[in-house]
Length: 210
Image (tube, rainbow, N blue to C red; front, top):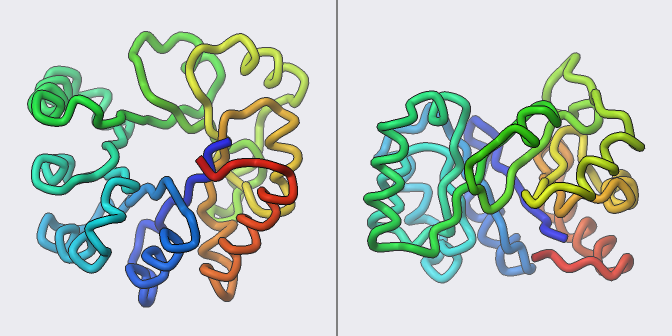
């Protein structure tokens, strides 16, 4: 089961160092989502993380940096998906030199996932539980119906929204292919320690981080 940590949209104190330590502790997937970062700010962030970990990072913006940095992939927001030709061309250019680059996106309903015709390596579905980082953003999926749909999907689906150490068992039972941690990590007093706790809980349940 994939364990994915997503960054906050705003800068967190000593974030690059914390993320680097998470990589050192075994984190395999990190989604870098800084919508207001300039290209140079994004480069500074990446440069502050050891190069050997760049291939675990998925960029949510400034996708052109995937040409010069050995990142794992790029994430398409709804805005990217709406700019069909521009996004298609950019992906084609990047993947011509990096064919193994992964492409991910996010959806907020089962209907959009089942109706999706694009081949994503995995997609986020949210909010599965009441959000930790967003007020009044409540979980909206029926457990039994959700498992039935997930069991019949070819697309790998990652649970997002309200996911924390206490919901790991539930996410597993629902049939998700992975879980995305945002507020469940960054809203804690010690994000690194919280990630290590998540890792230990996954190990206790015989779940791989990858």
